[in-house]
Image (cartoon, rainbow, N blue to C red; front, side, top):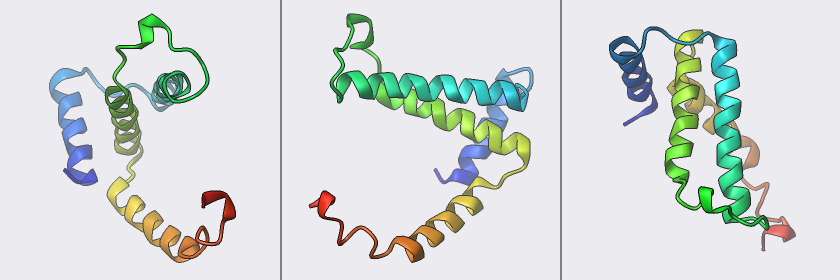
Length: 108
């Protein structure tokens, strides 16, 4: 599924199962909350923090999908064509960073 189709799928889900989109500020707060859940899993599973028993069954993929869902909501409600924006950003990064990291001794 490309990003355009994902935006459409989220919009259809909101129309079929939701009442309406939460407002932009509520969705921004939800995004922050979801990113925090991802950070918690990463910090405890891959970082130096101990993982609590209650966190051991958390699904990183599911939490990442929550982040994507809210981002798609924000794009839809603010009129952003995320596919177009992503393609443009990838082009910019490709031109700007083509050789940038190859000489980085920290990455060797």
